[in-house]
Image (cartoon, rainbow, N blue to C red):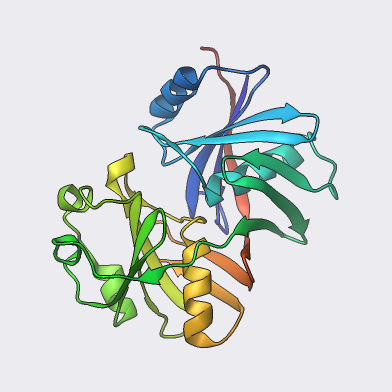
Length: 261
């Protein structure tokens, strides 16, 4: 089977978030897919299987299957166009645990239609903020993740959280964010998910399903640009459209190979 590694939300190779994309030639067992994801040891491995109504898409971390992943969806769409599985102007339709997701090419950028995942303000559980090592000015969560705003962009970049303690938080992961100080983006973030085998995710599309609605309310605009301030870094364009968000970014293939197992 064809296997690709793609840097998603990247301006060029070795930036953004790497995802493995496996184009299945037949249905495969969940345990096999989880084993492949463990072998790849990337934050997400995507498995794409052609169906009459589109492509079945599943995402696995090295430890678990997840319900939504932005960067591996971007990588999957990129591979389908690059490999000629989709015509250049054809829309990608993905059947997922989060419903139908679509992706379209817009000049140099791929835009994906995702569900919004707004957060609600709640009290932080004991130890969560302390594990981050930062002072929170706002704490909220949705069904999957915590979102914590800190006062300054520099605090986001300098975080050195206690990942063992953070992994005990009752959620998939923790999003930390602040308003940007300029430089072409509106907000910054980082995403930690040690509970699902991802200590820090370089660029997280699904986190922007929460960040988009949050900063749209705070800044009074529906069109935003977020910068995820990980070591690799990456830009995510976000448009908030009611109960949906449009996530935009670019991708670069760094490896093509054959999966033999």
